[in-house]
Structure formats: structure tokens, C-alpha cells
Amino acid sequence: MPATRLGVVAAVKPAPFQYLAPRSLDDALTALAAGDDGKLLAGGQSLIPILNMRLARPARLIDLGRLVELRGIEERNGGYVIGAMARQRTVERDERIRLGVPLLAEAITFVGHPQIRNRGTIGGSIAHADPAAELPAVAVCLDATVVVQSVHSTRTLPARDLYRGYLETTLQPDEIVTEVCFPKAGPGAGFSWIEFARRHGDYALAGVGVALTVVQREVTEASIVLTGVGGVPIRASAAETILRGARPRADGRLLTMQLAAVADAVRDAIDPETDVQATAAYRRHLAGILTERAVQTAYTRAVARTDAAPAPDGPASAAGPDAGEVVAAARPAPDRDLGPAVVLDDGAAEAVAYELGGLSNA
Image 1 (cartoon, rainbow, N blue to C red):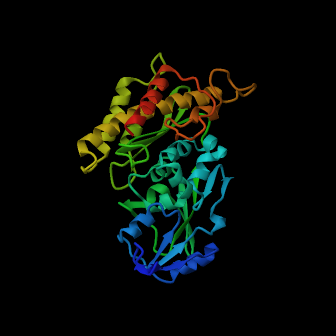
Image 2 (tube, rainbow, N blue to C red):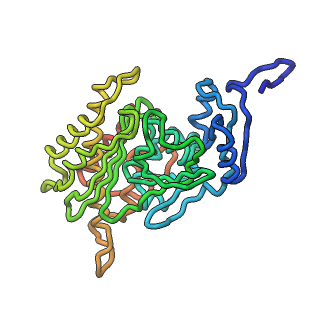
């Protein structure tokens, strides 16, 4: 709508639209179902620039910011249920998430800058489906489930089934993401998120999330998901198969040949595009390198969590730090409390040194 200032009429950047601000989920669902010309506004960190460039011209903008019922974080059914309107910064600072969903706690520090995370929401990022975003890849890596609701029904689907293509999901026009459910990490679980960007806060040229389960030093379960190298988060199933059954060398690190085979399988699983930021060949090579480092870091953390777990008839082992201490982000935001010190072996120290050294380039 035109605005007048000192007698001069100036048009706002977006195309004209009707603004709606429902105060309950039922009202929001009703407004969305009233026509196919509505657009949902969550945190607005992606949508507002698109509106300003007039790449989207919705007739109605439905602001979900007043839906307090979608802001909660609670432990339920062996995991953590995060409301779609929970701010990313709130999740980042939640101690339960830091301890129970360490991959999410680590990856979320790479999302833009604190100002972005103050406004951005969990559900907004998940539903926006940007192929270079961190949170969709984390959800797929952890086999998270997404709850979506319409005026007619509520359904739950695995995060991997939500993404269809670039900025495209399987959501129906009248559906709203209401919750995202992440499983809780077990004592033998290890995680790592590593990405590379030209500047801190930019979208990653390539990124990888790794989740491992280690029993008696052997990898029993593995999940590897990549971002920034395709139209959707890519699960590297062949690489996961290679990694299962892997055991360490005498020094506690995984075999170089094992890691190289996993990296090669990751490169075979992706088909990145060339753009002004990087060539496809560079992204493919980078994805393999990041995967090797992320797998080794996740393995080291899994062993530490296992060693720190309470013995059946006694207190926690003195062989490793507390389980929560080993999940400190590899590249924390500048304003973030680093938390307690962690004693790392040579392999983990090398991986962390690489990530921290990348601050000048990322």
C-alpha cells in the first residue's frame, strides 16, 4: 500500500497484499483454506526478501507470529518435539537440545547470524526447503518426523518424504507444519556437522551431517546427509553401508581406506551443479573431504559418549568427559559460550582444528 511522507507518495517494495494475523492455529488453518492465494509468514527471513524482489506475489499474507501454541519445546515419546514457531535462537540456547539432539544444536549455529536466528523459526526453515539450508538436512539425517495439519486432518511424515525438489515439498496448499520431532541421542551415538562457505553466515557450498551409533568401538548404524549439492538433502545410503562394521586402528582412528571409500561413495551419490560460487567438480570434491572429517569427528564423539556413560553397577567412567560436553559446536557463533573444555584425541583435535581454521574462509 502506498505510504505518504512529506507529501511524497512512495510504494513499498512488495506487490500489494492483504495482511492477516490469526491468534490461534484454527484461525490460521481456516484462513489458509479460504483460497490458494495465501502465503504463510513464519520468521520471514527467506520470504520477505522474495516478496521485496516480487518473486512472489501472494494476494494474502498469513502471519503465524502470534501462534504461541506452536512455540514450545518438550520431551515426548523418547525424543524432543519442537513447535514450528520456535525461534532458532531459542532452540540453539536450549540445554535439553544441546544434550539430547547434539547434531541440531551444532548445525543451527551455522544458520546465518544471531540476528537471523532471533527471527527464523524451525518450522519455517523445514518447510521452505532450501537445498543449501542446514535444518532440512539435519531432520533427514536424524530421521525426524514432521507433523502437518489442515482444517480436515493431521498427518505425520518422515522428513525424508517432505522434500520433492528445489524449494518444493509434498505439503498440500492448505497444510501447515506444526511440529518437528527429533529422536533423543543414545549413549553410543556420535554426531558431526561440517560445512564450508565463502563467508561465515553464507549458504554452504557443501555441507554434511553425520550420525553414528558405536558399540564396542564398532560402527553399527550410520546416517550421512549432504546439503548444498543438489535440489534436496541427499542421503548417502551407499556410503552408510560401507561405514557399518567399521572398526578403528590401534590409535583409535578409523582406517584411512575406510574413510576414503566412504568419501568416494558420497561423491558418487551427488550430482551438484556449477554456478557462480563453485564448479560441480569442486563441490563434489569438497563433499568428500568434509565427509571424511565429519565421520571421524562423529566416531570420536560416539566413543567419548560411550566411555562417559554410567556403568551398570557404578558411576560414570573416568575415561571420557560427560556426554553433554562432547557436543560443543565445531565452529560456534562468536557470541556463544563455549562451555566446558573437552579433552580430544589427536584425530578429533585435527578435525576441530580444521573447522576452526576455516573461520577465515567461511
